[in-house]
Each structure stands twice: as structure tokens, then as C-alpha cells.
Image (cartoon, rainbow, N blue to C red; front, side):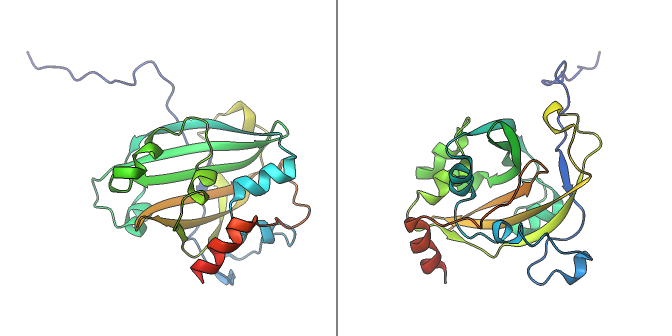
Length: 214
């Protein structure tokens, strides 16, 4: 009698990402996306510093991270290509909501290749509810690649109660961070509850990081 493989996730609801890219990620200008982000959102999309720190400042400390899922999975084909991963290589994929004043402001998806989580960076495997961005910008020698933008569409298969009233599309940004010469891919999508007011102000250490990246 043939052995039957047991599904370790049987009985658990299947997770679906709330937003999916609608097209290729683009730098400036955005001619190929047939639209431009709202003028008041653009400074946030192009903010070179820690988005977590800027959101904490905007929320006056009323900030929280809600982990949607964090597991070892195969990234998308496009993500594997940009990170230089082979087809069957897995990565730690972490998806969270960044909440300001109790409302979901940002959906973030991070792809952390296994080879990037060795040695001193092994602690990034166990972030829990700690914000990844804040930890990255606290590391000396971090480098950020170019910021690219995209318009993401709601995933109809996602049924998160917190996002029931979300718009059909949202603007997001993505970039590769290099830490100890190892790549990490971070994408951040601004949700409808986020209201851009003043442009985000970088903290002093972020100014130093920006200067080192130019």
C-alpha cells in the first residue's frame, strides 16, 4: 500500500497576499504605468530613510506591527530573478501590516534569502512583531538600491477583515537592501487609511546612510 503524504498545513486556512503587482516595478518617470501617484504620496514613496521611523513620527508613537505570515517559501519568479536565486531556492517571506493609530497604513512584504540570514544576520529569522525596517536602519553599513514603484491590485482571494474596505488598487515601492553584501528585498504598499500630510523627515542617522549611498 502506497504511503500517503500528510499535509502539515491541513486544517489551517490558506494564506493569500492582500495585494499583487499589476505591472513591472518602475523607476522614475512612470510612463509605462499609465498613471502617476498622488502628489502628496510621492514624497513618501520616494523617502530614502526608514519608513517605520517616519510612520512612528506621524502616528506620534501610536504604531504597531501585525504579522500576517512569515514562513520559508518560494518567492515569485520575478523576485527570484532580482535576488539572483535559483528556481527551487526558498526564502523567508514575511508579510505584515504597519498600523498607525490603530488603522492599517502600510502592507509590507519582505523576501529574505536563506544565504542572507547566516552568521550575524541570523537573528532576522525571528523578528516576531519587531519592524524589519527599523532593524535594518540600525545596522552599520547598510546600503539601499534604487527605489522602484508600482500600482498593486487587491487580491480577491485574500479575506482579511482588516482590509475589507480597501480600494481596488494601491501604490507601493520596493528596493533591495544590502547588508553585509547580502540582499534583502522589501516592498511597502500604502493603504487607503494612510493620509499623507507633510513629507517624511529623515532622522540624523538616515542622513548619514543616504550620504553613504550616493
